[in-house]
Amino acid sequence: MSTTPTDHQSAFIAHRRALLGAAYRVLGTVADSEDAVQETWLRWQEVDLATVRDPRAYLLSAVTRTALNIVRTRDRRREEYIGPWLPEPVSTDVATDPGRAAEVADEVSLALLVVLESLSPLERAAFVLREVFALPYPEVASALERSEAAVRQLVRRARTHVHERAPRHPADEATHRALTTAFLEAAEGRTPLEEMVAVLSPEVVLTTDAGGRAKAALRPVRGVGKVLPFIAGVLAKPEVEALSWAIHEVNGRPALVGFEGARIDCVVWVEADGGAVTRIDMIRNPEKLGAIRL
Image (cartoon, rainbow, N blue to C red; front, side, top):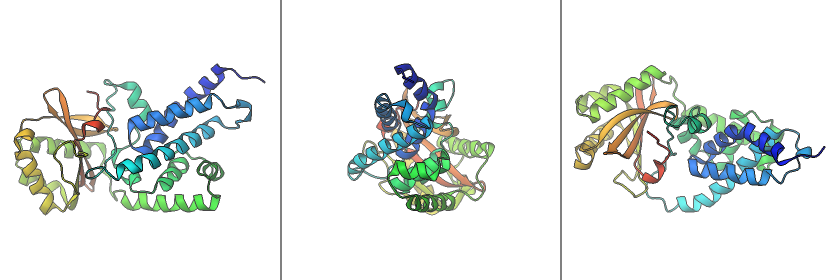
């Protein structure tokens, strides 16, 4: 039975959201993820559909291989990146950009992306294909060009690492919003910064990503005794004092967005365990703020 371009297009559109989600989990940036999906589409048009048993598995395998190739190219650039690297946040307010929200980030928390980034690229790809999209191990092995035994080991290591890094008592939506609001009130000077000690874990870690494009710490700041003075120093800077702040939904959770006039200066999000903030992540690199649509 012959196929037509429409057959290719229909099959691809049916799975595009999953493809973009897979690429975003592996790559952590929207533009690279969209490039991976576009390249997969171009190659898909040349495929004989009669030879494809499961289009979803085929396409997920293809986009993941493409994403891994992008990772290898990008790693050379990352060696020259100034300071810590954090994943790119995406607005998920339906009113601002419903298509992007539905396709990319609504189910992909920034906290998970930070953990996935700490895996090796192969571990990350294996985890995404198996644990997120439930591809059978033989399909994952074929996609990654590894033996099934090797893939099982990759998934096992990745699963263990993700479990170890996950909060023991994750904050529910109401707690997460309350903690984000507490930071908003502190940033606006409505709450004394010293009172934030009550909501910070003693081992809290603050990571700032500016890529050399704005002022930021070049290494993670660890421990409440160092994090709180660092935040106080940042908030006292004239360029930060001039910012206005608001809470917006980013990657499906409330986050703090700082504005300089109409320009977005930064995005700040927190992760909590048992009601105490364990991570504070801030992005000030303007190249990573393009997917924040407000």
